[in-house]
Image (cartoon, rainbow, N blue to C red; front, side):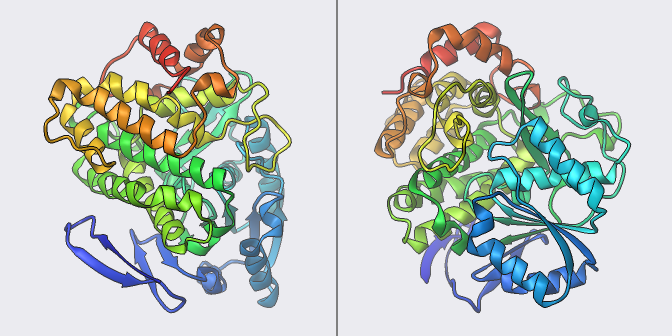
Length: 443
């Protein structure tokens, strides 16, 4: 397969061919290749694997990517155990179950095959198995948890993403629903970054249309939020010790490169990837966009769309998302993030209007005659049009929320300061209330 794209570092056109003989490696820990799992046994040998933990979920356990890994482990006589009870949209309870499994197994290498839920669960299992005396809240982000630094060396972790959204194969973040709080939180530390990410665009061809859409919305918001986040030189306070330096540092020249490039790919390929599962070029491109945006936001961070999404997902009532083979109500992460995006970027635009206009332009809007004061409205309208074309639900009211739920949604957002403090515009509880209210209807 052949296509042209733009080099994110040099903005020069270049061409490359994806086929089973072609491979490229970037950021030292990412390998991108068709049929990449054919190499996994060699990678495990290089890591000295003797006892492998393979984590996935029950749906993926029946699909080819997991089968390839199992065949390789069996063929080469590598001892392993499989954990297939990962919950889609994991909770503190499901994290703890996986952690117990990891502690009992005494594994020396972890392999996560799945989307963000699987990879994040595997990160947490590896972390706590490497810190067997730690309490669960020790590493959970403050103020919900203690946010302690990670001091022990974690075991090698190979991440094999099968969706094109979270970018978890590139980041030091593991997200879960904290059920008592009815909101998402997580663990954020560079030590959680997978040792190796094995990215095979063919793995995304199995995704149902709505899974592809919601995964793509996560890429979209990762790029938009990291590109518009509070600049790194305005973030405070400065940690007294580098070990306490946060994973999310604010927008910066390096993250900007990846965010811009990811946005360009989303603008060109997301609609195609959603509408045609057999469009290998589009699905492959969105898989790379997920990686690119992951590198960007994993360095810069996200802000209000993600901070507000956590209680949207955590307070779900009865909504059953199409395309997800789960037994519990679910507002998929990417959907919970994108539903507030028009309101959020209308709110933040006056702090960096040039960036908001640039984002709108990348997404297809002619901004040549637009005034800076209109940047928020223009980007919001651009997003609404983009989401309408992809048949996104009409706001929070379409996933089961009413205005009576807004106080609980605001309450669940307030503790998310790890990300919300990176908003370029300071906000109050009243501002959050207005943003949720504005997100009840999109069109």
